Amino acid sequence: MRRNDRGGTAVDGIAARRPARGSRAVLGTLTAAGTLLALLLPTGPAGAATPQNSHRSATPQRTAAAFWTAARMRSATPLDLAAPARQHRTAVPRSAPLTVRPTLPRLPGLPSLPVLRPTAAAQPGGPWTGGGAVTKTAGRVFFTYQGRTASCSGDAVTSANKSTVVTAGHCVKLQGAWHTNWVFVPGYHDGQAPYGKWPAAKTLSTPQWTASEDINYDVGAAVVAPLDGKKLTDVVGGQGLSFNSGYNKTMYAFGYPAAAPYDGTRLIYCSGTTMKDPLFSHDHGLSCNMTGGSSGGPWFTSFDEQTGTGLQSSVNSFGYQFLPNTMFGPYFGDDAKNLYNTAQSS
Image 1 (tube, rainbow, N blue to C red):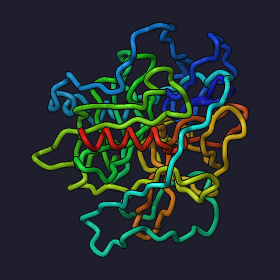
Image 2: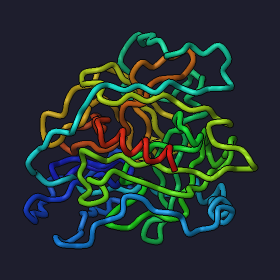
Image 3: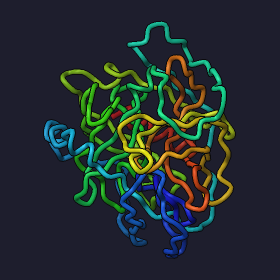
């Protein structure tokens, strides 16, 4: 995550918003999910060619998986980006609510939709010890950016192709460059890949993130290739999703923060009631102390602590430097829904 130009920090280092009218004032550095402190601002001059919203990997799948040795995964550094500059806020397009149910073949008897069992108290950040499906569907994302090995987080979701991972936009593309050697490691733990390393055949993001790195649309996805003849959600299951579900919800956020005080070795979570960002975005806000590397980790509504299932409604994106221990995540509106549909149809 990192802090925005507005004084924010983009998780895992990519959620910086493009300055308005060419302004490049940086009011802070994004730190929620990154530690490179690159203070990277989106470039992309006006009049440039229309950016592509997806990228097909040119790296052979076996090569990408082999590249990520246990040592490389342990040493991967979360990216830190500059915060988005102050600009006019335009409403994120919304339509009728849509939910997609979890698909968890390895958990017989799963209810048709998860039933929320409220936690006893809000959790601002700590290891997830509840077990359940989230320990398989959530994972770390590894990729190469500007010659450096870096990390984010992601989540396997129910999809028609059984191969879709949802993450943050800055975890697939930054400053006009798509990340390479991209792999998803569900259930990651201290250099271990208990359910395999799943290379991306294709990565995608919203048109707004691709064109101008608009923090409101910091959503990305990957379509991963089969591994040993099996598809991703047949192995780890897939969480549900919820689009256009409103604000001020009870949510659980998960991720693999790798910047102090965390080290990226285990799954961390936060929970509580969200608020709407009162400053420079239309994002959800949640009391949460996750740091760099957590970018792209899932936020769930209707999360069931007993089964570890829920409806993914956002991702870790950024935080403001002047507002510590608060994470922000994009509203899953029509553009996030369109991205998901494009990914699952690939």
